[in-house]
Image (cartoon, rainbow, N blue to C red; front, side):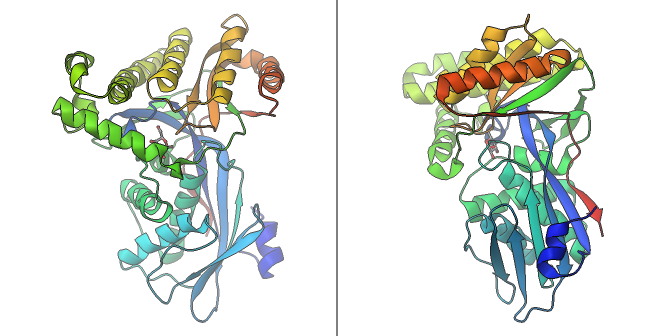
Length: 382
Ligand code: GLA
């Protein structure tokens, strides 16, 4: 693979090239930090890092981000701390994770390119973290278990980006497999591949181009509300709560806390049913579960927004007859993307219709693309 950016910037070819994908979550939203199940897949959109050892003194990592057109420098002569530009914190956090394990990192020149849309709810941050971790593994000869690597990346996001995210994004960016969804039990951290090979359907991603920002505090607030609900229910996480038990404690909690818990408990069940539906290629059922997930995220969890709702409404109006089985917001919410399950032979017509109607409703241009389930992070060279 040729990375012209690296050669243009540094005047020599890179020694290592690695790639880590973004993800789309088919179902299981805001369940990961409740010890529940999620069902994401890696997408054919990648963050790619090309690198070579440098001679910089004092030792530092120099990263050129070709998309933003700016650069970051990470000083390796001391423990790595937060810094600027903001995106560099995802990499800084990963470097710190390696340093904490006693891994010696040599000075590096890096160029960074990405086709994962930023703020699109498709885990551009996890792709960046996992790409950095994959590169540091390759450069330093460190062999990390996939779970350990994903957790290191999650920690980077917690401590350097300030987002108390769950484990889904980093796990699927590390462990995604071609033609498979990843059913992840976020309590045991066990994964199961769910094959999605039927050529008659495809997942269509609709990026509303309304940027989402999980750092805004809403995400942390939802997480805290779930913990409150679990405490009132007397369980260690909402994974252990039933819908009946929740109904019985309804009067003991704030209405919003009740609603948050109702979403999580229902969503964990929907995720398992969806996995079953996919195994049986029961697309109408899977589609209905996706719509149900969206309504719950919109009404109970309150993480949707009018643009995401607009996409779902357009998909409903197209309906099964027009080739859309189901649609829902995907990722953290407050903007970002929807994912729709559509008939493969209708995908072009659906793409045009959704883009046109969305523009009419919101005056915003959406970006649409379909993706097969893709492979997780890989070393392409080196
Ligand atoms: C973000 C987080 C994930 C997960 C989703 C919501 O993508 O990074 O850990 O909580 O939101 O399902």
